[in-house]
Image (tube, rainbow, N blue to C red):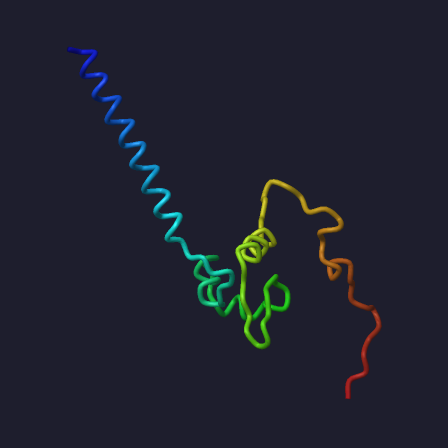
Length: 112
């Protein structure tokens, strides 16, 4: 009896795994197949305000169709990777902004 019970449990698990595979294929088929998305959805996907994207668009990867700005999956990944922070490492000399090397002049300015 114990072997039959075990066989029944294994059979149920196999059926549920098959059902999960079928369900996962179904969700993959119903995925959004659009090639490009706009500001609103890109901001939602990145979990940031749309205004942030719009203000920095000149420095972010994107596609432009006339006046329409669009993003692809690769663009969203690139934007995310651009803002990766690893707190355990020190920035290299090349990573430091050029303004860090600037120092104020000791000369005084004429005031009018």
